[in-house]
Amino acid sequence: MTSEIKQLQQQLAKFAADRNWEQFHSPKNLAMALSGEVGELTEIFQWLTPEQSEHLPEAKKAHLEEEMADVLMYLLRLADKCDIDIMAACQNKLIKNEQKYPVDKCFGSAKKYNEL
Image 1 (cartoon, helix red, strand yellow):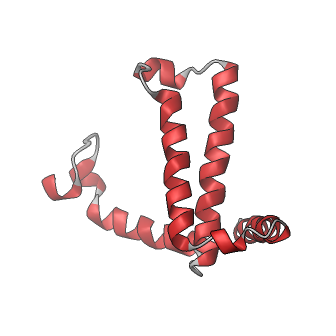
Image 2: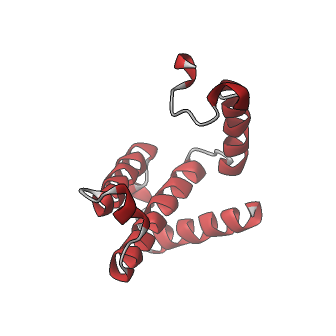
């Protein structure tokens, strides 16, 4: 998986370089673009019931797929520009979350770790 992530990051870097967009891809700009794409992703689910959100019509699901791809691509681009190994960061965060949310304290609860 890590090599696939690196390969995608290289493709994204080439895509930007081929268009002379590197000048716009500062971490600040990439974070702002990521935020915008998350907003577009969120909009797909706006006003839906929880059940509706789990059973999207094909057209909405296709739109969801595109927005999810945009979010991931901006996140990967940001990680690349900031020299962060996103897979290692996820593994480290998962370990921290396991410590903050032990199964015996949080099972079936949506409470935040400081409320357990």
